Length: 288
Length: 267
Image (cartoon, rainbow over the protein chains, first blue to last red):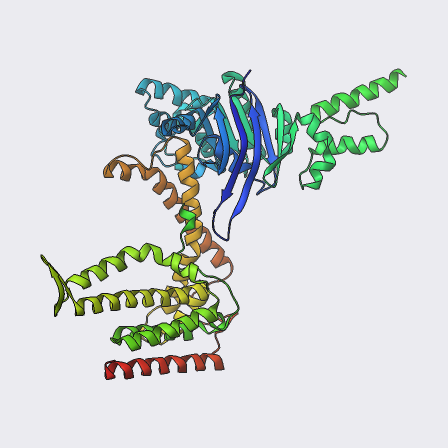
């Protein structure tokens, strides 16, 4: 199957031609298949935010190409605009972009820009509200009356309502309490399962990425350092720690147990897997 | 890009000009402006030009930077010089159809170009070598006599420094919100004037809300540190006039005197 989105030798130079010139990303080759769930991790300033803004044409690459369904997104002005609707991007702290009088109108902003019919817009607003767990009574309220977590979910619904083929979220759980975090990650997973769309999640939280994603891409100073399944990546804990990133806490526990001599699989990265492995181990010993 | 705006940008440095007291630089700039406006002969302009070149050389500000800042003002300079060139009465040198070129016109146009150029470069030199903080401190100190007639000088200068401090923050914020709304298909470029103004709403409303939020947060943070206005407030970095400041002011007075002299001589 051909990748839905692909980048070839992507470079981006900030403030070109001034003393403040800085290469934000260099030679990024990246591919995503239809329906894949990908996680992107990396330091602040590692270029991951710059990178994702290239995928929907908000930033124009200094050199290199972004291909959506095998067509260069910068081929024509109309195509870039079209791609913006197909590649939905949720920025960091998206609740600060809300502006309409009612929640309904704010979610409808994207679909309206797509020039959909009133009926279609109505359908999509309700569908998106359902995905993020916003009760329909709230749709007529002002977004500014709601809590921080609700605002964040409404902002995400505003992008989901465009039914993008690719949904990209930049740290969607930053600054939320554990309950709010779980809720948003749950919403994103159910969107991925039901719509079969590609999801790219940028985050700092290793636990939440370990549970959800099928593939993990690690960014370091503007390049892709590692690319593989969470198990493959987290097995190289030293390499991650060297660039200042951590493995999930439970993986650290398992690593320590291995050092102490327990025969555990090093690719454990969720609490459930750990429980199972430890119970197996215990059961195995009893039998012996 | 919005980020590339260079308005009153400060270039840190350790030269004599950088180290002068901001009050000296402010007074000096005023003297310089007055000298510039009263001078009306080539010699006096030449003296000011030489003087400014010396200052720029001392300050290590590159000519390229100044020229770059001058670019947006090019249209104004060209327009005024053209107007002066053709609309000054005098002996015509060349006359063609309704266009009359006079000696006085050429002279006025040249003077106007020089005057605007020197005016702007002088201001650039001030803002390039003085940090916004120093500038407001200097202004506050110079205007402090006005406190006697109940002008809230400290509060005004505090507002000014806060405004200056938040310009880059707000530019960054504007950039971010613009990208976010573009990601939802907002179009800021096409359409007629009314459509364009309407398209700004999704940008302006979040921007205003965030400005109010920031103002509120800043006010709380200031109160937490017991800010209560100017009365009895001491400064970490007090402004002290040094020898070099008096020397600089004397140089300013000399410059002013020479311009006056050549002006009255009419050469």
